[in-house]
Each structure stands twice: as structure tokens, then as C-alpha cells.
Length: 177
Image (cartoon, rainbow, N blue to C red; front, side, top):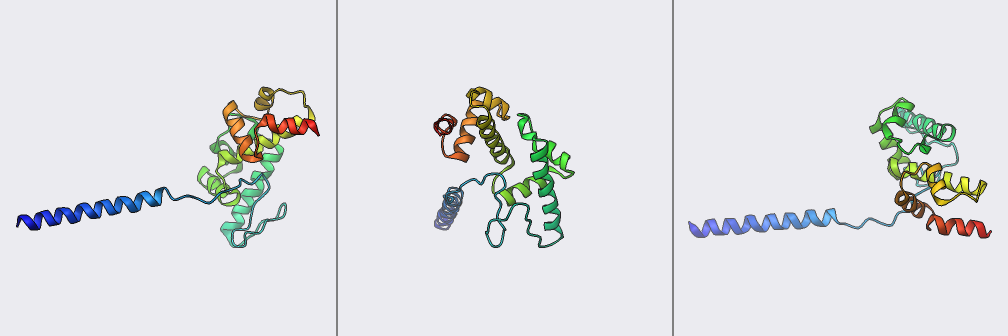
């Protein structure tokens, strides 16, 4: 009887250990390297081909609705530039587009391959580059604030993520041209 209990305990312990090993491997699997696209770079889900500016692939009614939300999102970003507000939230953009935050979040993840915050920061990086190209006498802090970034670390991290170099390096290269 005791041998049977000990054997059962050993088997249960081994199963728990094996389950833990499987779950930990799944959690720490490496993801392939990913290059964040700049605003305007989306790909068709099935083919992976780059869509032309303004082109939306429509497969069903849900996709058509998503395409409409996407077009309204792009128009909002281009016309009103809400990303310049450092307190911008996904809820505020969703309300402005007439949808909810879950739908908008899924749309951004599916179409741009990044989350809302990353996409907004990509627009801000582009804005900082545009501002500097118009007036290269602006300081880094002025550029950061004018492009909608609230912190220096987020500005530097986002800039590096989308351009491959720090803001100082990037603007130094621009000035030398």
C-alpha cells in the first residue's frame, strides 16, 4: 500500500514538472526579428504584398467595415494630428472614429503589425523629422515636446526603433547633407 502511494506521488510530481517545462518553453520561445513599419506601410493578410496608398483589400463585410475604420483613422491622423497630444489614448481615438477601443486595437494590430502606442509613436517620430527638416535650429527638447512625446526616454527609444539611430545621430546626419 505504501509503495503504491509513493509511486503515485512520484508520477504526479513528474507530470507536474513536465507540464511546467512545456509551459516555460512556450512562454520563452524567441520571436523572429521584426522591423516596425512606418505609417502607410500595411500588407495584405493573405499575400503579404505591400498595399498601394489608399488600397484596402476587402474580403467580407467585416473586412469592409475594418477598411472604413482604417481610412477614417488615416484621415484623422493626417488632418487633426491627435498624436501631437502627449495624453492621447486609444479610447479617445476610438470615440472620434465611432468605434470601440477593442475594435480599433485589433485593427491596428492586424493592419500595422504593432500596438496603438507604437503606431502613435511612429507618427510622432515622423512629425519630429518633418519639424527638424523645416527648422533645424530646434533643440531636441523642443522637437520632443512639439512632436507629442512626453518623456525623453520614450522619444529616444521610439526614434531608435523606427529609424535605427538616436535622434541626435539622425539629425546630425540630416544637418551634414
